[in-house]
Amino acid sequence: MDFEMVMQELEALGKERIKKTYISNGAHEPLFGVATGAMKPLAKKIKKNQPLSEQLYATGNYDAMYFAGIIADPMTMTETDFERWMDAAYFYMLSDYVVAVTLAETDIAQVVAEKWIASGEELRMSAGWSCYCWLLGNRPDSEFSASKIASMLEQVENTIHDSPDRTKSAMNNFIYTVGISYLPLHDKAVETAKAVGPIEIKRDKKKSSILLASENIQKEIDRGRLGFKRKYVRC
Image (cartoon, rainbow, N blue to C red):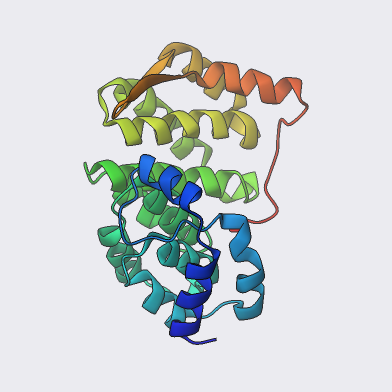
């Protein structure tokens, strides 16, 4: 399938109700409002296709950009490519669920994620922390340095309350992910979650939401999911 055909297929799959939901979360025109699950049959036909992925991502159309992440071939992408994708990721559903997810399937993931965490930019920091969540939730514990992850937990504890909202959310998720998916530091993550306490996330025109990593970790423990790892990062 070529670029034009894919765009036509995505447009046909769009639904006004889903489009409104995406817009309420920060998306803006152009977009069609395609449910992520509805993209799967199309993705199966195409499989990985990096040139087509790049064409779709460059449209600025949210649905096309999301689909670009699904059919991307991450191992062919360079750090420069990921920086370019991040530059175009204008809200968290792109930074955390497209760019960070795609980066998590590469060998350069930790290096790039750490640069983003140190960048001081809200969405880059959010993507960096999110990438680590995708990594920890999928890869064997042996691939990570326990001292580095411990240091990152300390960084979260010391800076989360003063961070931008999207970064706060990703940091909170990092505590939770370490607590459930990285067994060597389960206890430290639980301690960190208790020390951090509730995190308030302000939302435009909506009521603030409160995040509490300690509660979420306990819920997953109660469900017998300690040590959980995803089979795949991307859908």
